Amino acid sequence: MHDRTSLSRRTLLTATAVAAAAGSASALPARASAASSGRIRRLVDRMSLEEKVGQLFVMRVYGHSATDPDQADIDANLAEIGVRTAAELISTYHVGGIIYFAWAHNTRDPQQIAGLSHGIQRAGLAGRVPVPLLIATDQEHGAVARVGKPATLLPGAMALGASESTARAREAARIAGAELAAMGINQNYAPDADVNVNPANPVIGVRSFGADPQAVARMVAAQVEGYQSAGIATAAKHFPGHGDTTDDSHTSLPTIHHTRAQWEELDRPPFRAAIDAGAASIMTAHIVVPALDPSGDPATLSHPIVTGILREQLGYDGVVITDALGMEGVRQKYGDDRVPVLALLAGVDQLLNPPDLDLAWNAVLTAVRSGEISEGRIEASVLRVLALKERLGLFRDPYVTGGGVDRTVGVPEHLAAADRIADATTTLLVNERGLLPLNRRREPNVLVVGADPAAPSGTTGPPTTVLATALTELGFTATALSTGTAPGAALVDAAVAGARGKDAVVVATYNVSATSPQRALVAALVATGVPVVTVALRDPYDIARLSGVTASLAAYSWTDVEVRAAARVIAGRVRPVGRLPVPVRRADDPARELYPIGYGLTY
Image 1 (cartoon, rainbow, N blue to C red):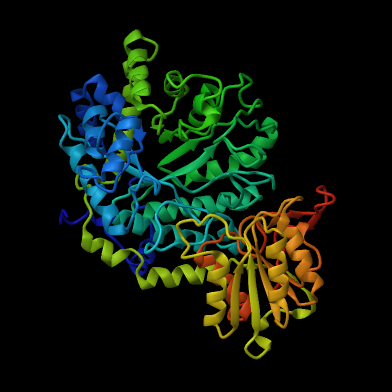
Image 2: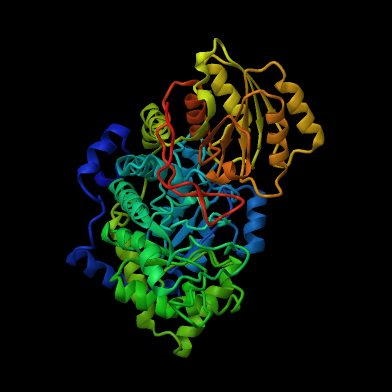
């Protein structure tokens, strides 16, 4: 692996050194210097049209290596992109960025990720016009994380919102940013700036810091500062705000029915805060907001929204990136050849992960050659993208070292900080008869049952197993029975049988709906007379549909760090101090609040 020393402000920091860097709001210069701007201008002047257009695309690619991926990944690249490797993708299409996914086998382990990043940068600098790449991923933490263990996994946005601490949000971002930088990832599609005012939101939920616009704004600004103090470009998302929808833009085209006044009050503040904090980039949403643009176009393709509001009214001159162009929300009204052209005409700079790169790339070239898009318009976006690369120090040294990975990723200081931050997030909603903490009993004997959602990157096993193991390590006698998110009669009966003679049953729940079989499981366990403790593994709204439980916690994620924190609260090792960042409404009367924002018990 390349062994050059990274730029000082991108040095791979331990938690202590990262914390020391907090004095600066952002380690990224506010903008390129006059000298570097001149160098960038001369670089653009050397580029062909094809190279300029390529700089605007950020693309997926399969494989753990830039030049030597597994055969299955070569086959997938040939089928989807028409190239064999990441290096060939860069030389053929001159792409300005690569996005990493776990499912594309880009993120097996930190050393491999650093090697892949090295190979990608070497390919970029080997071009006729040498240009380093923006290497990005979605590492929001909590429910969305592309890089897993042994990297440090931290509480996600809503958990941090429950902590009510901008200092913790900033620290989490600094740690996460330092580890991403160590692996050669220089752009993170985070933080989520959506205000989750709709409990039925199927795509945002715990990815949001909460439902209070001003509280979300403070958290967003803190995370922008934290990430960028570690040399990571942030991408606040999803402009103009995806928090109030019952549709998922991955599979449909949602409509946000806020009036302009409601948008100003609810959705705008976090993006204003991100801009004021110096966010390096902002990601658009594939949503229709008639009050902002009555045309019916998704925001990603809307000139009134991207240029009129984001650029002109909010004064944002950083990089604007689309959400992924393979999502159905941006494909329903126009074909895949028109989407990238319309996005550029709307005012975006980066085109993220089109389903057919060759079609999209050639469509933009054709639009320029026909005069639909001026070459000056293309150059304006290229200049913004290259200026961001300059701010990140990529032209001077885009490489990271294996030693830097060892010194930074998943180090004990970071893991301890993750646990400490998580301890401030768990929210206690119900505690009848003072059941918790359970440590009042001698060696409590508990059964842990419940949901087993698909494992995110931050888990070592089913949440029930992680929770039982954590309780055992804390002095309990704990056994696990995974009943899943839709337990049938046989599993319910097994849980009831297993509850006999126990001091308590802990039930891990996951997004309990009106028709969820999880309700029958909880009701059957309550009927045994054994105290029932529920732990909501994702959205904190589950308790509204569960009656008769003795105690209830909100953990905000099923990653190990948050599940272990819930175990420490149950065991009495830490006191619950988290407060709801969203209201929990009554299931029988959604107009009334069961628990308001800021609610949380302690003992």
